[in-house]
Image (cartoon, rainbow, N blue to C red; front, side, top):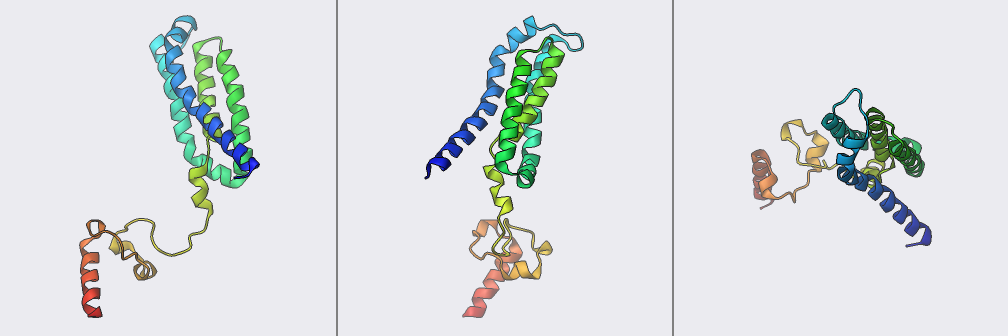
Length: 176
């Protein structure tokens, strides 16, 4: 592993861990947030719920589109934009004068957190598939002729459909 790869790995791990640690740290501060921040629209408990759940909902909803954005704009650029955005929204959360502003800041922070989280799980989407084998066991009614030709015959018996098992038996009998 080169020095550059090592620092890239460290940055990705620290950046992603900050985002996910932030979701649990706020739980500790929620009672004090409810007591000290004034609120005009929300009740105290409702505001606390929006602070916590709004962040997690936004974060989880935008993780999947983040993969497509990283393919288009580049992983490094999106990671840096997300990290800067997460820092800015963290400052906004710290300076929030009331509960409503804090809820809005946490929603934006969740979006920035999704953008800055590591996209290693999306790497497989950019690589070409080298064979025509289906990625998962598909229903035989909907498979194409090409997929039937290249179907993986090493699938465990408990995952095969009845028709596949019968075809495998017929194939073994024809070999004999």
